[in-house]
Length: 268
Ligand SMILES: C[S@@+](CC[C@H](N)C(=O)[O-])C[C@H]1O[C@@H](n2cnc3c(N)ncnc32)[C@H](O)[C@@H]1O
Image (tube, rainbow, N blue to C red; front, side, top):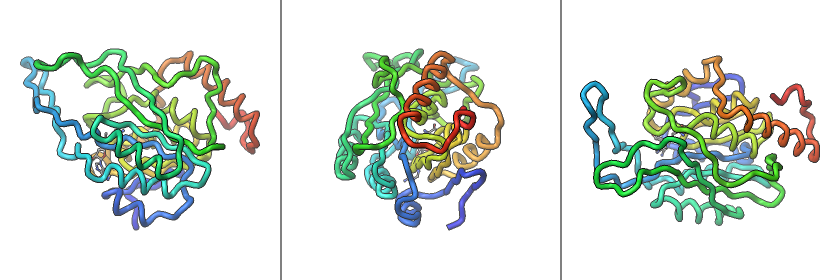
């Protein structure tokens, strides 16, 4: 199987993850971080914008529940025990992903990404969608680095707006700072991260910045291309500086409690 992109420990496959994943080696992954389609049944289609502001499309051909549970289950099957997985979910996919995680032998819990500045509610909607739900699961003994007493299972990060630095042409691009945080809690430098629904490659970019290795799979070639280009950029976007500093300390503390050949100098 020929990768679409392969450089410095980061590999992209263009294709349906249900076809690509069975061709990867078992026990070749440490952590799954996935952001599959939410399968939102949006009744509003395209919202016509003000003149000069463009239209806001709210329906994507790929936003289907079909294949989500299978992709997540197959991704977890490639992990070395003890492992952990993190997966964003929509209401229609939540139970499917929960079941897949339980069947993989994980303890399953919820987390949320709260948006600092959510897009306003559409006509006919009661409240704007100001947070997104995720499930995470882990086996006993899986690596976890965020030992801060103040840690919690929801995080506030701003979503990208068009024209903002770092925003690429993917309609549901996750904030890099959010994925970077999740990754630094669940993985250490050198870990192999798998994102079977990688979109514009936010997980892969975060992995590269953190010194991790990563595999991403994307069904639409235009997004695989965007991801490959993001990986070639040298700029590292970071979110909140204080959060980063706190996290660095807790990662170092956690790693001090576990055997690791990696020196502090290599970490950040
Ligand atoms: C929610 S988006 C991921 C966005 C990503 N986290 C980012 O920051 O850009 C889900 C992606 O999964 C892709 N996708 C949907 N079904 C797929 C499948 N069966 N195999 C691989 N990719 C798939 C879609 O094309 C879409 O880009």
